[in-house]
Image (tube, rainbow, N blue to C red; front, side):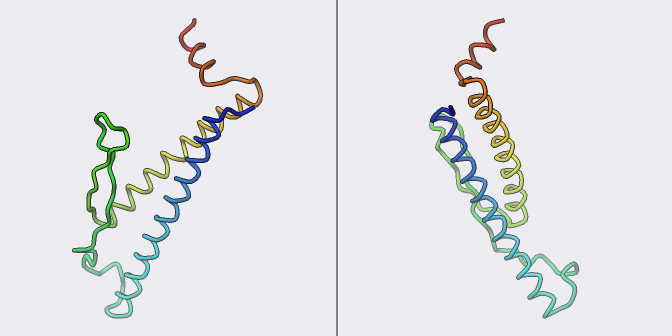
Length: 123
């Protein structure tokens, strides 16, 4: 049986992945809308100057320290924000793979994270 902590972790990671995908899709739509406006007005979007000047998105960066839930809000260029979102999505997907493997082990062998930690310590 899967432990409650593993099930909660999987649920949290899937919600975080879905939220990141939705935010990335919104950013892509905004980028496409900007490109379409530019094409209608001036031609090719590859020749356009930086239309994002003055437009920023807020990114919350973990600040570390004593409180693991502490974040520092930073305003970044949308292009940089999309890169950060893609990197975060890759990290969340790798965590999902790890959590799925933990769940598989718990189902097949009745192994819990405590058992794994004990096996790593004991040679």
